[in-house]
Image (cartoon, rainbow, N blue to C red):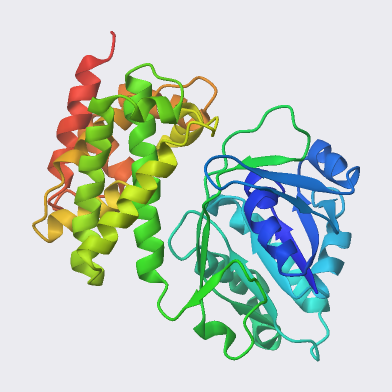
Amino acid sequence: MKAVHFGAGNIGRGFVGLLLHEGGYDLVFSDVSAALVEAINSASSYTVHEVGDGGVDKQVTNFRAIDSSVDAEALVDEIATADVVTTAVGPTILKFVAPHIVAGLALRDPSLPPLQIMACENAIGATDQLREHVVELAGESWDALASRSVFANTAVDRIVPAQSGQGVDVTVEPFYEWAIERPPFGDNPPHIPGAHFVDDLEPYIERKLFTVNTGHATTAYFGAQAGIERISDALANPEIAAKVEAALEETSALLVEKHELDADVQGEYRATIMRRFRNAALPDTVWRVGRQPLRKLSRHERFVGPAAEAVERGLPVDALVAAMAAALEFSDADDTQAVDLQRMLRELDAEAFTAEVTGLDGGHPLYARIVEIVAARKAALPA
């Protein structure tokens, strides 16, 4: 069996690639970093180091890497004969993955089982987005190619901090979750022992996005605001911990009402997430977690997404709005979106900024709340 994985970074090697390896797949990583591709191809194995309670070292073998920017033909050949294609590149990069998939499907022997495609991104319906790109690019030829692939959405969860000085080895937390929707595969799901297949993925995606991602980003923005470097140290601050808890209580109330989750079970899940964030063995920083604030403040992401639905249901959102106010202060010269965020705050009025960044229209009940915190942030900016 063979799997092609787009994105040979830390998540690709330390989470998705590891589980595919454990499922018995030969791994082909695709990336655009020549240095990373060379490093992977120079190694016969790499180690995933789980740090924290219960963590163990796991070795990955039987892999190779292709630089898709210079050797697209080789990549397409691999896709044409693969069993599985996965991604961990970020939702905005999926449109650049699609052409390789279309080309691979065009070369694929129709007698082979359908290529099983899963986008493992921090976004709702990421595989659907990828499929839309593929169908659009294929155009009139899609009718002939459609039977050669199957697309399934996933929900993925593992904290993989920024790495330093360990080659292609990866340091991760022991916890992980990979939920995959079952129906698209029929009776032939991919063999991934570490994943679990579910009939309805939406509750899993939103539980993860609105608990893990909301909580992580909230910790980062309040931590940065307080001048704290590490995520675990930020949560050692009782005031910050209380603010994160309050935000997650609001998202939990939404999840319980919307998906009819058991409130006690969700409470236990929330407590597990907070313990994971407090893992002092993970060298995770507020700057890594807080990066790309414009994306995180967009309409269907971890703040505006749950807050908009909650306020529509008459549920409280004060803590989520406070977290968004902290996000507006995030300033990091090394992060393009953080720089753009601060520029837009200076150049746009509060209403224009709110509409452009959050995607909310003026009639939405959350809109005025966001305009208020944007105006306050603008007033606090130095002249």
